[in-house]
Amino acid sequence: MRLALTFTALAIGLTACASAPDGHDSSLSSTEQLTPGKSGRTTTREYRDTAALNQVKRVYLHPTKLATGETTRYVLKDNEKALVLTEVEAQLCFELAERYEMVSDRTQSDAEVHSAVTWFEPTGTVGSGAAAVANFFIPGPLGIRLPGSLGGLGAEAEMKVNERQVAAIVWARQAQALGTDSPSLSRLGDALQFAEPFGDDAARVMSPEPLPPSRSYTSATDPCAAYGGRINETGFIIDRVTGLYVPATRPQKAPEKAPGNAPEAQQD
Image 1: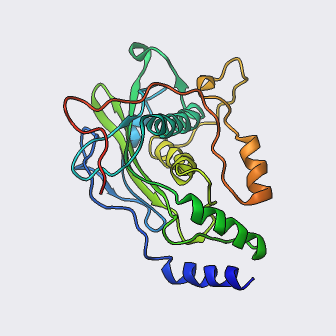
Image 2 (image 1 turned 45 degrees about the vertical axis):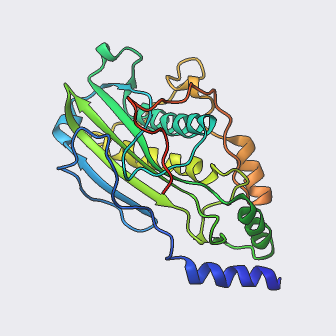
């Protein structure tokens, strides 16, 4: 109990210390129209052309890429890149499919969506395990995370119609020392669980107005079936029992290669 209380004091004292980087090299076709959106544990810059979005019915989703540049930040092995990129792409597909008809042939689409991961901070697995133990002894709506174990994710996406940007978002989130982010024994834990709120926010920015009725699918008609299940049932049960986030298991694509001679990963 004394150890748990010590962790809590550390978490409260350092909650505001961790923050996602502001600047980055963008993969977007334009960033000039972006304006501040959310701020706090999630920060965004957003743009949407509602009139243009209201004309979109069919959407083609490009594979999520790994951005490169001086201010991109990630230290990922090839298999880890594939896991993060696939999860971001899957969550975008799940959310967009509720609003639009997703097509596999880009020539049949009204709009195309591009996305990229720009920043990654690994989850500290040892600290996460200790935090899970502490949270067991101090139950409540908010959990604690140890400093040094806080992972994060930065990503961006845009929707284009005839090569013109009609919606875009730049997004970043870092785990907080005191909050609802579940610790994980995977160093990708925070990045993977943050892919879902990124998909939510990206789809929100890319949605028509008013929002159409949510589309529903069967296993046979789901356009996102290639990514696996939308609900991580096993992970949900483990999280409820142990307080630990367990990533979903998804079919993996080949790791994205950086263009030209640019480095595939950089360490800040």
